[in-house]
Length: 586
Image (cartoon, rainbow, N blue to C red; front, side):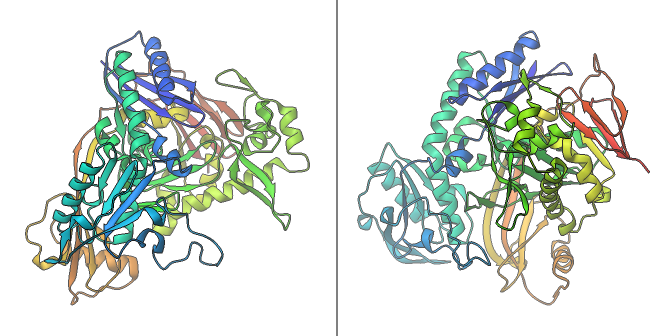
């Protein structure tokens, strides 16, 4: 039996097949109809392995992310408690940018003319205004988000509104806030619900088309990677596509987590440098960090996610000078078309890839038959030092690495840097030097590690229960999971693992984070977060027919799945799993 993982990116669709301990990989160009690319990649990698029977098929997609970034979702309406129609537009009091008073927030996904109120009001513990369904106006929309006050505590009014909306609009995609984000904080809950509804029709069309294509091709219906690092069925992801907004990057972190464990490193930092952006995530004690939400395309999404920090720096990031003449890199990217100048596809703007080529850190021929044009790169970078370009982009990525490590109280000397993505291994050693890491891990499947993460992913379903009550009155709590706790009167919470001594561990966590603890003050339990998890398959990669590599820098090393630049004072060798392990020499 075989396990298949396929990750769709903007340029390439990557496939990994694990069969009898051997790893097979494939890369195909991403087509406009992404399901065609997925099936093509699947058949390619299956042919390599002799067409084994696939036991599990897991998929990572950017369909939801791209639709939100490009604002190509459904025509959406927003239904809320009467008098709160402006909540998406009022947001919170913070500015879009602290020091730029003219910076604008992202325009809401639902215009004010499609925000409708229904007469009702539930308080914290009783009904204040009875629900009047006749007060809900008639409107037209492809998707409808329903978010009433206090529905996280008592969803009865919201359920009745949803039933009425579905009766009136049988063809619309309807989402209720208590289904997707049953937590307090009205704006974040509304924003999450609207994003989920807005993405529903386009994500459902793609996912169901992919499921049908997979069955036709003789494959099992795929599971879909969640932002939290687990997987969901196609029906679950189609019903609530907000849970897959960082599907691909989350899979990369899962892959890095497994590679670090196989190399015997409990503490690591995932460093995924692609063509447009770089994603980093801290892995401590063998587990990747998770957050309870983040902003995506300028909108808060309050759902469990792998705690990824992203910056606009990648191999295709464009080199430019600002008004003061300073050299800058990104966040604009040459993308896949036309791509960096050295691709020879008509691109004229200099990129990080062009700089790496001129520094001798890339081979002249890349996988897929792409021959790099040194002269085109030289023309694009005329008058610019390629090393300066690399230094600038490294500084941007170093800031991201410090955010998830040093700024959170972790000493990077205790962590290995897991470098993957198309450009990660070219920059990893230099960044490790600056950060203080002594070990760099470059997986054999570095170029397709997100797909490997899909193969290794757990089946995980997250649950949240909003309480907002004194901890002393909460009664018996689950054994596993997290509690969101705060001192009474505070605005924000700390996440503390459930278990014995919860109150004292909260005091200790508060003291570590803020420098003080008030043991006489009442602790408030805001929410409980638990997860149902079924572990993914073991990843044990056979050593058969794998060539060992052992080098000392400076040297360009062409590995099976990546090109790696080994500077002076660094040396590396492949381990028993095919991972290229680099260490700083004394």
